[in-house]
Length: 406
Image 1 (cartoon, rainbow, N blue to C red):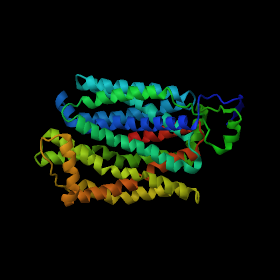
Image 2: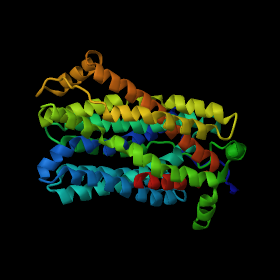
Image 3: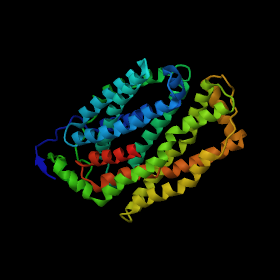
Image 4: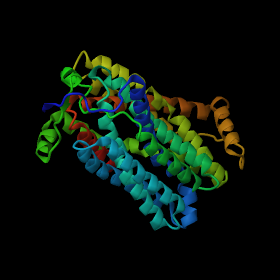
């Protein structure tokens, strides 16, 4: 790691308001890429009918998109650890917006698959490069807390995608993709005014030098890769995603699970799609408690270097029995068939109180997601803790690649 004396810091802006605006933009974008991810599963049935293909081929689209995004993220992250990260994020956002727009106008299944894979390439930039940027804004003392908001924004994005896809796309599946394309273009414009975050600026060891105008100019190279993989903590952080995502990646099927349950109870396909989306969104609200996991991880990490890892491990293991209840206990669905989105939402919310099976399922789902959500902020924070600024995006993307395979 090297520091070069360059006089005044070469950044534009940097006041409190400007920094806050920049953080908001980065966090919102982290949620938007997950809106794109969560958009397709609730619409499997509608898209399958439109293209006259079996639903399993739509599942293939989701799986392929995850994998392409994860592979692309490695390349984006490596370049981002060497180059201007703001420009890369803008280019990545434009690519996924183009892919999402292409999905909306696709005339057949091959065109839809190609558009989704294009969007996945752009999405790979948002997570890996965005993570590198955000870690340069966070001091080590509060990494768990702030990364819980980063992870929470992604969870909220997935929920929003599920809800928007199910409610807005119940009649016309193309509308959610058109809406998200417009939002993606707006996000690109918002990037133009973000603060140019300096690499390494959150590190206490570099604070004094950077404040006097020095520039942290070390960049990753291929010669660093053996050292990155040689860190035992990095190896475990990367590999744990394989088994974790093999299990928890099934959550993407929640909208389909509840939609199929609704159809099995006699509801029309359009109503079933809305029911599946609302139930899936409601049952994943426990993810907001990732903030608690981040706070506990911060506190325990100050007592022992194993603190964050312990919080994440205990949370995941404790959640397993609650997931078994969520997936296998039947629920009775009571909503007005053929009603609009508002009526379906109100009926589902009322059933939480009036129908014991729904209330029990919601309670177990909240506990399961609350416990599982302790993992992500501590995983993010550990990557930042054990790697220098120029390696973080690459390590994150390698972990994300293994997650995608899982």
